[in-house]
Length: 633
Image 1 (cartoon, rainbow, N blue to C red):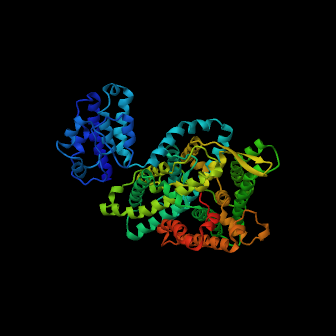
Image 2 (cartoon, rainbow, N blue to C red):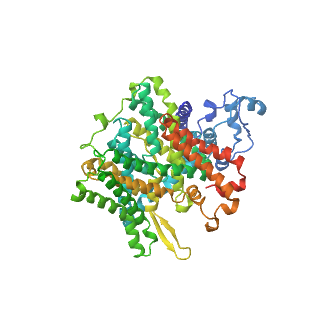
Image 3 (cartoon, rainbow, N blue to C red):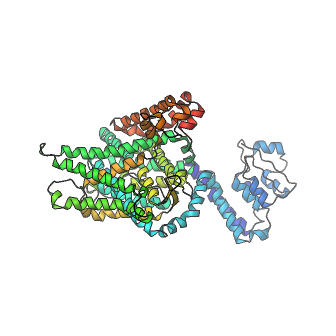
């Protein structure tokens, strides 16, 4: 923060001088005279001065980008800058190297006055003065992301209107696919936090944050949504606050503030390049954890139905709920596989795939309202009758009610949450950016982290649940916007084109935010339908996970494995050892997450995956074996 304030002060000092310089280009002494040249600090780089020649502006701009800064000054300004009689050797010892903005303004002083009357040149001067100081604290990677964001921002909206036949069914499916986690996690969070955060908060947070993120982010195909890992952290933070006798919501807000600052700082400094440390080893274990978490939540919901039965001898309701959930799961899976079918033509199969899941949800809801099922008592969503936050609290959190010391200490759990967001969010986005998806507009990891940081800060001040990169919803978004074709030669379904846009994500999350006005309608949707969707999302996430495929292939006959299987390259023993290490990591992370005493420190366990991959595995496997078992994405 101090460095940012100092740079802002420098900008304020530079602007008046630059403006005066534009008006009277020959009457102002060199900028270094007043502010920079006569410092007695020890220099980091040498400054080479010469009065023998006058360079052109282009050469000066090129030289200012070099590590060794060369400033070529005319003879007339040299006495003003350094004083008469200073030799070159003495000058080097006493002077501090000029910044890029100083060099730039010094160069402009040597330009012809006719050039300075050009409005384009004047705009360039002011822009350079403002941006050079900012660039010293903002990484080049972030500026590249911003340029890409500006380049594609208009087309990201326009492209969404070009294929309405694809957009409308995709939005309807994604609405229910994103609504299910929001409602389900909201119901669970209400139980874990004793009503401090509930369904309404999750609907508002998922909707508003998704809309903001779709505008601010660099990769609009990625969605943010409630995740099981974030919910585990919130639950651990709530238990910690109760144990310490601290108010939950003010602590929640300050942890969010710190996390927001950390995420923005990471994005501005170009920390997105660190995601390269996450190889397939990390991605596969992490995605397997997410997949099993969806399946676990669905199974837990169905298991509760057996405990709610008043008469243990009458198990009609729990078994009917189980049948409805499995029916939803099976129907959605079959509809999703319709593109590989031989029936109908390609257009009909695509329409069935797009509208099918929505039709399944509506069919199950109408079936539960029929006279045959109404008496069974299958549970439906529990939502308030009118719009209100949990406990009837106000919209803004009184975060100033905690002492200053507590506010500062909230930075410690914020570091853990930042680690979780960094891993969860970037891994989800990297799966979206995979080459197999054939996206064309590029990646922007640093801008995505800044966008998530801004969203996190906004959610924290109003006490709404944090959102993070959602792998399942993001991949479903990519698949919904993908046009595929069946290749007769390879007998495989191949990606033809992906409609990369911001419109679908914005509309989907706007519909989720407006769902708070449809609470009276949501109460008719059976809970087992969402359990079936959770099973589908968890199973879908397993697709393409080579770690889980190797677990399955461990009991397969060798000669029936595909020719490109790693077994034929490094041997079954090495493949089994590598797979076993991943399996132990998955089990350890699951136990760490499920333990109430360690759930708040769960993000640190995720970071251990990168350490294991970079430090431990090279001791057991050669580089050639790791190339086969864990290819760099």
